Image (cartoon, rainbow over all chains, first blue to last red; front, side, top):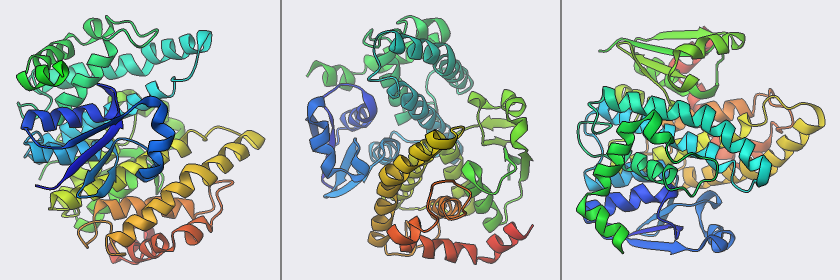
Length: 203
Length: 203
């Protein structure tokens, strides 16, 4: 097994958390290197495209969280074998990345400007994507997004739903997921109860 | 083989072109449904997440261009077999999608506002990504981005470089690629000379 080091903010969410969870669930050894938000400018000097997460594989620096999720998903047995099911897994992960971009574009705003941007986000693309995820999950059997088993798509949705329901995002109603996509809330609860996930958040 | 229909703008570039090329190169039958830009609002009423491209597989509607590229790449024999090489292929496609998002955010601007946004884009993230792509291609052998053979990553880079050097993007110097990443220009020329690609653009 290659030497793996994952670099990201010291934060139990965002773009590296699904990767961390996949490796924890599969029992894969890796260095979980975390840095405080205020060290971002310093840390990204050493990353490809000045961004995180970064996965180092025997020292080779790799960027792009969904590429990393897919690779680590394969290492962890948490990526579909079937090409069509892999397509659905990828589609869900890409769609979440799009919506994350839209959320991130509201970071740094304040006061009335933040309120307006967040309300537009909630009523527009966030609601649309939650409804789409709800339907997709139903169509795929209701429990997992792909291949009727846990994959990195479910882990990425889990992290996203956990963030949306946390109350840490101003002007994002914490009951939005339960109103628009209750099956995603059930998915969050199922993943949350996995022993490896319980242990990950207990530490 | 499933029935495949690809829906996108009637435009030889953008987010569906690598998919079209992969299927043309592999000789895969598909419906290449194209609509004029002014019909966008009407067409996206029928697509997942109100966006294009959309791939219909036996009528099942799939969104997200890189998920589609990966699936069609597998159908076409243009996706790496090896997991690490697949990671590099994915990393390159995801990075191009990020930079496309940044370019698209300047569409609709005009005059001095467009000029300033494009200059910032060129000097910042576009130059950074071209230099990163140049290094990545060199590291992977200089000719192809992954597995020493043509993959959907090369096709996506080809489409991107073709756009950047077209002269259709105001305030993006057409010699930027040749100055910062001459190996990408050589890749463009190699792909452009493939018989299936010549025939695709002749029609």
